[in-house]
Length: 314
Image: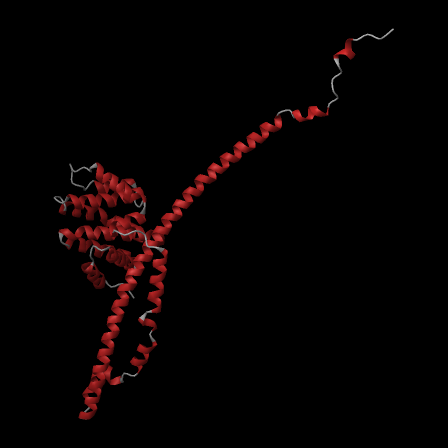
């Protein structure tokens, strides 16, 4: 599906504060990263038009897009850097009396600085738009530091859930695939029996036989019920797939965090092993340099004192 500005505006209007909503739209934007410039321009336009209470939501969306698109390219990082100074200036001004929003923006900027999303100079430029005289409390700094340490922890804090259990992920995937309406052959068979006239309004107008019209009306009613049920099933599956997709994304982020932890621990213990190996080599070398006392047992015994000083018998 090609990028459509009107469609993106509609999605921004429907965006809500749930993690799933933000991640879904973020994924959609990243999928259309070839249109990064248009997406960022529309994002900025809608940010400035949005009510004060929704501006932070736009910042959350930009944060998700910027961080999750980096592994595929720098399109969004470059495009957002073009509008972020004005966007932050606008958002900070609208939140002059809203310390909670300002703290959340502080957190986003701290994350970008810690993870080197942007240069320190650029982060300082963004922070310069922050209302003067508003400092961070120690609690805020501790909370921000905790969030920065782990992407998966940041997501779990926002959703209030722990990382998905592997068994739960597997069961959800199996249930989704086995019960998918897309694989329901009976539905396809029922669709194949729908008369062509059901889809063609012009053909209906040409029918003059009353009995044939009544028969067709019955077919249309049945088709309408069938399509309505199918649509409901599709909507249900769409919702479930969104949930599973969000679960998988969080699961993958948790696994990446665990991978980093294991890599750190591996490096640490490789260093310890090298140190022990060095001590072992030093001990072996030192031991080899000492005289071997066990070799003295092979020497001839010393003579008795009497044999050294005693005289000969006359």
